[in-house]
Figure 1: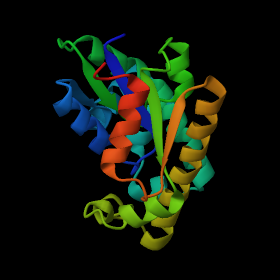
Figure 2: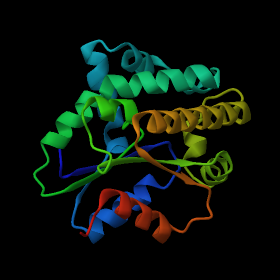
Figure 3: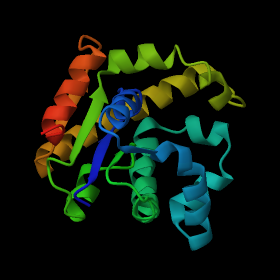
Figure 4: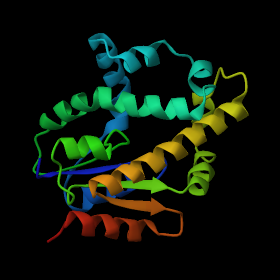
Length: 203
């Protein structure tokens, strides 16, 4: 997988923006994992994967009104269940180079597959940056539709992602992968430069 560059990390960190810019600048095929998560969930459920089956049966109320720690633990378990589906789809892409991003690219999973440190990094937002930008996203109310307490559900969601970011950062340190924290004070151009340097693109 030497021609595939992976960007992991937590939601609302700028992964998609960076990947889109790199795809255009370096003529790379852009594969966005989030576009296929619904399909992967169905595949996992059909295969008997516990968390995928559970997610297919859950309502917004049962998803978002749970404790953030439990949500976070199941999010990691979910990505472990669908990881092989992601890799299989990457193998089908006929391109000289690929840039791909998604929270599914957990550091410990990448290390287990032998992905080199110059082909993977993770981007995480600070809690403040994450919450501020989630509040600006028009589709957030639709995700929480059906929750009895939308304010509490949103708070649980944000706390889940904060816990997720901390664990990804911990795994990056343990597995010796690069990580970038986006606090909103770094421009998109500066973020792209950091990723380019890590991947050694353009050399």
